Length: 227
Image (cartoon, rainbow, N blue to C red; front, side):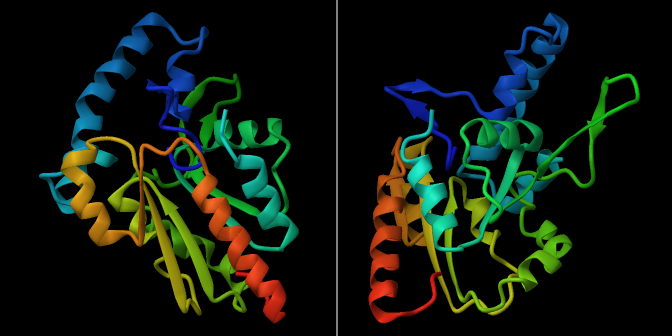
């Protein structure tokens, strides 16, 4: 719900989890259970009256995407995608859109299949909205490649996403852009306090792409390496 749309023309868009929910090979019984889990846990995730500490136990077509992905690749800017969704689906969609460039590194929940091809769980630690920073330590080798990169553009759609850059070495500047998609009135003040820029129900990457173009253009003029 950051790179992908939360809604389009007022209609909620599917997440990577929804793609599995709506699959024809998923049984009706499984679909009912997934729906029940969603109705139980999603209200907890977005509840503005609960703290992150209180929530933790419960959490065990893109517009402008081509410009965004391609601009970062052309300028050798690493793109780190930290997703609480399903990594297999995320990777497949990026590949189908033909923007899976070598500068991309994804940390997400990857499905684990047994020798008969049946899903038996997920690999490694479960990643959810409120522990994204904990898994950064497992990717320290990845970040060492970019010790000369001192600036981060952080995109998130929840308050839990604010810690995604924790643990990255050598950071001097972080510009945090928040996508506020749900419970806008209740969460607006908290998002405004936490993020540098808050985009309400924005279905595009226009603001992000505009900022990137401006930053990179100024960098080219000053002959300064990209972010």
